[in-house]
Every structure is written in structure tokens, then in C-alpha cells.
Amino acid sequence: MTTHFSRHPDIRLTALEGEGVVLHLGARKYFTVSETGLSILEALKSPKQFDEIVQLITEEYDVTPDAANESVKAFVDHCVSAAVVQATTS
Amino acid sequence: MLRSSPPDVSGVTIACDDPLVRQLVEDWLRDAEMAWPGPFSITVLTGDVCPFDTDDRDGIPQVGISVQAGAPLHTVRITWEDAPAVAVVDATEAKATLWMSPAALRQFDAAERSFLLVMLVFVMRRVGWYHVHAASLVDRGGRGWLIAGNSNCGKSTTTALMATQGWQVATDDIGFLVRDGERIASVGMRTPVALRPGGLAMLGASGGIDMSRRQKSGFWPEDLGGAWTPRVIPEIVAFPTIGERTALTPTTPREALAAIVRWSVWVLYEPAFAQEHLDALGMLARQSRCFHLTLGPDLFEHPSLLEELAS
Image 1: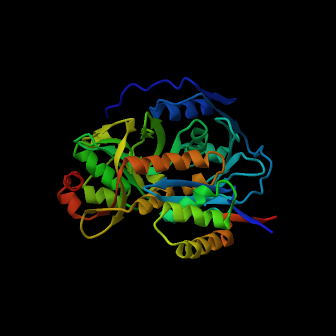
Image 2: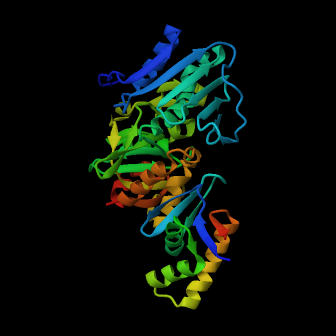
Image 3: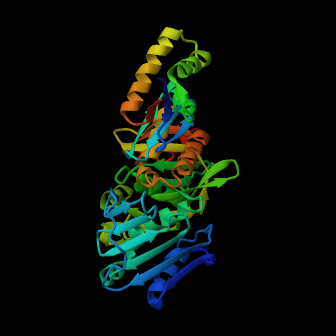
């Protein structure tokens, strides 16, 4: 089984100097995200597997695969629980 | 009172069976002295009974107003709480149909500044003009300022004080963000700067236009020594709070974006045009230096302090 992660269709975002504001239209909430979080959410405009997200972060930032794995997992888990990101298993 | 010649309201179609009501709406739009991006249309229905079907979408509460937006209808429905009145803004086109009861029509002045203004915020969104809750001014050095915040944060009192120093004022409250080439400008409806008794006392001002329904007094910028300007290109965005001493402290980019979004979020929650509106707010933050502004009593003794702190 493969899980793909993608941005919820109710999400809108904008960026300033690498950081961002995320608007969740369905939940009527907004919040700010760090540069890394913004990179992940921008990448998840199209569905990606977890390993692809980690690879993107290791390519973009000076971070070890283990550290990237840990921070991406924490961020994606948080986004899934907040319905900012959807996980689809096929 | 100095007032320039009002532009016509060409491009705006106002339909109403009652010629007096039609004239009230037309005068309201003409007196705003805006270069309306048009075309847009407003149909006004009157009578005792609301002609619209019920709408069970969740409301986005605002002071004195309820806004319903999004699926499944995709229209925006605005319900005034002061008197029976409802506006329905089309899902995609710049047109709205209003119903105003006789009681609402008797309070037309109050409706202009709340119910009708909110209707206009959503109609203008459909032509690429996006709400910002901020005063917009130009200082004596020609720099554009946007002072963003909710009611009671000092926007109007600061606007009035700066007008006494010769600043130009577009609005003390609600602006529309519009693209101006590669930049964002704030366009303001020409309305009096509305001061509460506390602001009036701090300025040492008296008189003004009676806005007693809002417990405020209104002053045209010209009456205070300033001038009205229809458009400001912000270079400085400030988020005010009241404090001991006046200070400008740079915000982080994240703080600036969150603060700009905060005061328009009730409009942003309408799904249609949300990304475009968010992009306009993001552009505004990117083109400007953003600050926390502490407004202290010393500003009244030294009104040029804002210009000095931002230099």
C-alpha cells in the first residue's frame, strides 16, 4: 500500500520572505508556518509520498535525512490532524 | 469644508422602484468620490417582507452584521442586525440585490457605514478590489502609510492627528487593495474621520459632523489641516496598540502577514477570490516595511514623531 499526501483543497496560502500564512477555508482558521512548513505545503499542491517530501527537504536545506525524516513526520502528522493535508492510501 | 467635484457614478447601475431610495444609494456612491472600477450593479428592493429564501449556511459574525458565504449557494448573504435588511451578492459577478425594510431605510446613514459597506466589500472583491481594515495616509515626505487594526486601536485618532500635521488621508478605517502596476495601492472611500469622545478630547477638537448613532464625531481631513487623497501606495505598514510611549518596532515577516490577514479574515473566509485576496495582502506586506506601532500620549505633544521614527 502507498500513501500519498496532498494539500486539502480548502487551503490557500501566501508567503513573505520564506514564511507563510495558511488559510483553511473549511475550518475558518488561519495560521502561520515556518519556511520549511511552507516548502512542504507548496510541494503538496500535487500528491507526494512521504519519502518524496523528505527528499525535497534534504535537497533544499542543510539537514541530515534522519533529522528531515523526523521534522517532516511531525509537520505532516500535525497537518493531517488539522485537515490541512490529506493522506490517501491506495 | 473643501470638497472636490464629485465624479459621476458611471458604470454603476442602481435599480430601485423607489426614486428616493435610488437617489440615496447613488448619492452614497457618488459622495465616496471613488474611481469605481465598474461596471457593477445594485438592485434595491423595499417593503415589509424579506423577499429572499432562508439560508442555513453558517454565519461569519461581525459587529452588527452576519455574513454567510460559500457552498452550496456560493452567493454572499449579509444580514444587518440593527434593522431588517439583507443583501445577496452574486456568486461570481459584481452585482448585489438588497432588501431594506422601512426601519432600515430610516437608518440609511448608519446602513452606509455598516450594512451597505459590507455589501460593497464583497461586490468589489469581484472586480479585483480587496478589503483591508486599515487607515491609509501619506506623510509630508510623500511616504504611504497603512495603519492596520481593529476598532479601538487608535487608527482614527492617529489619522486625525496626522491630518492636523498636513498629512493626506485616504481613509481612517476601510480601504480596498488594488493592483497599481507592480505594486498594491489602498483606495479609500471619502468619508469623515470618525472620532470617539476620547479621541476628540485628546486632539482638543470640538464640533465636527454629528455621527451620534455611532457615538462619534466626523471630521473631513481638510477641516483638520490635511487633505483627502483617493489612493495611497503603502511603504510602511503599522499595527498599532496603545501604550506608554510612541515607538515603532519592526515585525518579523510572519508576524506582519498574520497581522494583515487577521483584520480581513472574515472576508477571506468567502472561498471565492480568497487566493487573490490573500495574494494582494501578501504583496502589500512584501512591498512595505512592517512595524508594531505603540501609540503613546507623547505623540500628541510631538506629532512629527511618526515620521522621525520611520526615517
